[in-house]
Length: 469
Image (cartoon, rainbow, N blue to C red):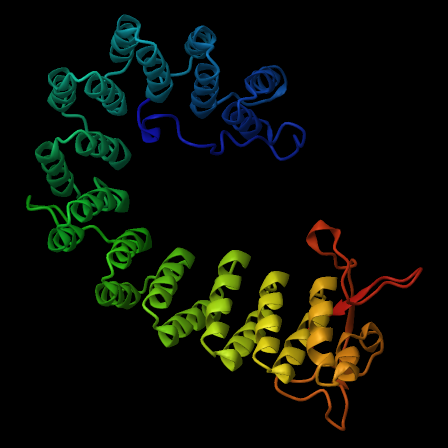
């Protein structure tokens, strides 16, 4: 099989139908999704429904997904029929539809049919997508026929097409995969020379990622850094304005090789260019800090991630909070979770669970009460398992009465109360603070239908949740 990058791209929007056509408005992507999942017959049925009822036509993207789905299902003859139907309806000869069929016939060992389709594509299009040549190259390389593969590559270059970055990137991947390093670097340098934005965008961050990763693969770190900053030498060529994805890739490679100081340097460089680190980048840095046992730096990065408003998913959050608590960062973990809870969406219940248990295990019962108080405030489900755990922990020191007050649902039903500020003991003589306004909402539920302690709903009443004042 050729690399995935040689085949049709994942589902993307097709022609947008009028908003009044509610029933058919989601049909194009439904068809492409169905073919991706293997439900080819359903996809074909939706396709025919579009033809019969929709005031818009299927786009080439539809035909790319349908032909690929049919080929993957072993129905390449029907895929050819669909190609003919596409052409008969007046659609242009789409290179990626032809590429699906060419790849299919090559995988069946039918080189003659693949060549026949390629010849037809060249007759119909003065300029076609060079990804088709990449498909032939991959197949020839896999047959052990490097000469034929490079002849296909040379025939493409001789046409002097102005190829977009995705096509050239595919060619780079095929060349590097099969040991044609010199040719890959020559293509990369030509792409840099042809990069003259805004007129011509000849490279993108994926281009640099491919070549940087090749340097790391060979253990040539210095060359990787030079490649990351490489620019064309041709008059008029301009440097590529590296984006977050490019920085994320090289920072990840540095972290994989234990080069945390270089990763930090490039992270700071990114921030200095007014680029905003994304979730994957923060995760990479935090994981690297934790691996290097630099817990304070991990805590600093995680705090920045939270302050930026980036979402912390459950699996990552539970793991990182677990590390903080294991390393004695009890107060910091509780404060961070409090800060996360002030924003939407609220942290996952499993993160609260890890923090409450960690605080209890560290004998930080007051802090664990604070976190439980927040769970009640935000209608985060306190599962029976967690209730049993905390009752055991508080019961050992005779503080179940305080715990019962925090978990008491009734205190959230009466106006005039607020949950206490973080750090204030529930044993304060003033008792629970006053609360403000109310807002009607649906009753909170946990995934999987778990029961939990939280605001309950009286017969004939809507449940109550918080509204900021």
